Length: 273
Image: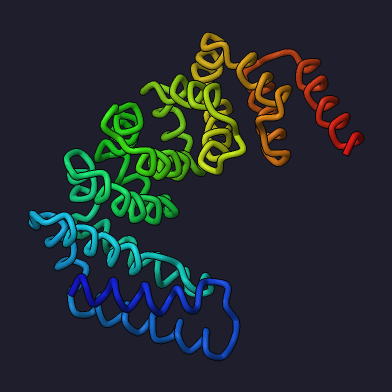
């Protein structure tokens, strides 16, 4: 069942994609939707969750995780309400507990697949809450800080942290309390924002800065102003990210003149171009 679901979805949706609008693409997306519905009606979610929980083979776990992701993935976006129902079905079938349990002990390759479902579930506030209650915020930060986490898995974990923080003040505060601010500043200091996952890190830090006075003070104490200012000054930042950098600094209570100076650097760069 896992192999069949993985094969069908990978073949069909790679051909069509969420943004494809041809008659052939529409037909393929209809087929994908019908396959999803058939799996759900046949109690497939419970069976896939059970396989993910009990299997001892990494390959089988990866296939089960990918099949669950495909069931929850919004393609096409016009049917998002239907897929939200599937996400809640995964969450209510014990899927969140199983995913978190597997993230604690699985190999890096399995974790990458698990994070795909994790991120998909986090697009709904209700499933965000369930994940948080199961210790999801703390677990993601532990994985990010682990020496055993691969670079590819760490990228997925950064996006997962971003997904947990999205439109959820409680999670933003929790990330700050569990060392998330220090971690995000550390990776922003060491690596340029020109890499996509680090853009997610910057946006997450911006949300965290607005969430609570305690988070603002942590950014100040962690030398956040200088770290973020240097990102812009040294050109290690997407143009689209500069707004998040300046607003993060301002949200942390720093002088507005600093933000104005950073905007002037950006203006000078555009003039030279």
